[in-house]
Each structure stands twice: as C-alpha cells, then as structure tokens.
Length: 114
Length: 115
Image 1: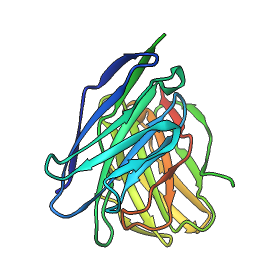
Image 2: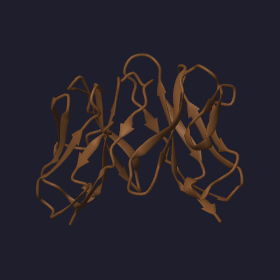
Image 3: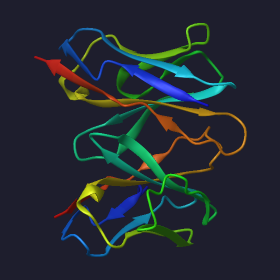
C-alpha cells in the first residue's frame, strides 16, 4: 500500500530564505509524485509532478523537487521565499498501473516572516 | 479555460436537513473525485467516477452519503439526513484519467456547516 509522510505540519522561514518542505513516500511499485499548494479558501493547485522522467522536477512559482529513490523522498524546495508563498503544501503519491487512488499527505503550512 | 466549478460555496443548514453539493468538471476530463477536508482527518477521498461510472466509493462514510454523475459535465454529492459531524469543506476534482499519472484539478470547495 502506498503512503506519504510530510515532516513538520508547520514551517516558518524568513522572506528571502530557502524553503524546504519534506516528503517521504512508500510505494511497492514506481510511484507518481505530486506537490500541491492550497491558499486560504481555495482548492488545491498543482505545483509540480514526477512521473519517472527527470528526477529533478521544476514547477510553478520557482519551486522544484527532487525524486530520490534511495531515500524514498520527494522534498520541495525554493531558493528564496516570498510572502506570497505562505500557504499549505501537500505531497501526494499514486502508483502506476491502472486506477490507483492518490494518497495525500497531511499538509505543511508554510509561514513566511517579513 | 474554466476550471472545476462547485456550488454552493457556502452552505449552512440545520441537522437533519438534506444537503446537495454540485460540481461541474473541466470539459474533456473523464475522471471525477469528491473529497472531504477537515482539520482532524485531513483530505479524504469519498468517491471516484470514471466515465460517469462510480469506480471506488470505499471512502463514503455511511449510507447517508450518496453521489451521482448523470452525465460528463455534472455530479452531485448528497447528504441525507445531515449531522453536525458532516461539517467540513467538500472538494470536487477532475482529471484526464484515473490512472494516477494525471494531476487532479480541484474546485474551490463547498464549506458546509451543519448546526
């Protein structure tokens, strides 16, 4: 069975500092991995996805994530935080092959301090 | 392009009343998902439709919940009778397929409060 663990339900960074949001997954077959962002009173929006092409995936708003099979990780990073990055971020995993439910992590709320 | 459209955005009703949530997926998407989000339980998948057919309803909490997709452009989630513990934000999402490789596109949700 697939699962995803997000370390840290709340992360605070200063404006301009590195953003690092951690995600570890468990999957019995090659996974598809996603990061979504949720702003207040909105639905989830796709930031980026990994589907077995390049291990370093670039997304919108300057975010990127690196798939590391040996560490079963898919951490999200951004070199320089902006105030507008304050939101909740969800990591998600699904397994390849037929219909596979997407499993979402519990989310990490990012606070950006001016 | 129009995204996933949900209505109403907010619903406040009394315990025991019937509640109907509506969703219009993105045109051309053949997979539709209903989720419930709460602080305690996070994001839970309630039901998944593919080509208008329910494929996975294992997340539907109990018989009070029902969902339909009469055509490719409309789905409803109904709660009858409603209870205070049903208070949550309900999201509808659609995607090009249900294989897991395609990302899901979410609506802005319906915030449901049962008094």
